[in-house]
Length: 231
Image 1: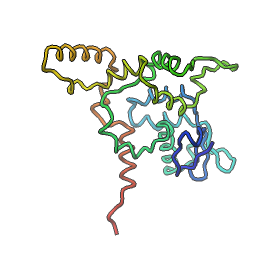
Image 2: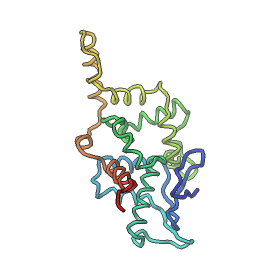
Image 3: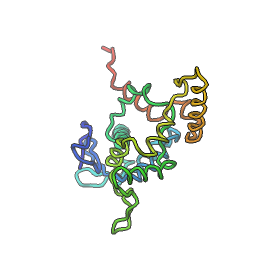
Image 4: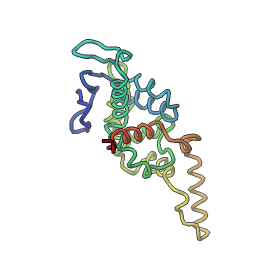
């Protein structure tokens, strides 16, 4: 399925294997495992490494049926492709709209595809009966071939009642400053929660101190789209 760049994809329209930017058709990797690994790599990657890492998802670029190397594209077209790759990684979310929700997102990282893979696997088995490591006739695990957006939809909509949501994500998302602390019972509960948060926390020494590459790009896009007073 090829998606014109002016439209936002959603699951009612299908699962894209690529997208179009002007006259170019770009085929990309769509498997969940690839994007899980790429997301982990980009989590704290320096900004100068993000474009190169993202373009590793490109399988082919063509125009009118003829292959076109990435280096042959102009800067503007390359930037549009880069933004569409981010769009795909976010599951079809408009990158520029991230700025509107920055304050609502938790400061702490809630999920790691690598550290939490066992809990993710168990949750999919428990809730959906899906074995992410079931192997097909070609020797590929389901987690490799399942479409990234399908995986994200299932993961993002996991109900309560599993260790991933009820333990890891729950305690990582708890704000200690909002817990009551007047009574002895309150203070004991605070200590208990703080201890569990420390146990399940993921090291993120820089992420809370600087703007992420994704939020920076979202801010840049918002500025580019803002009306000017010239003329």
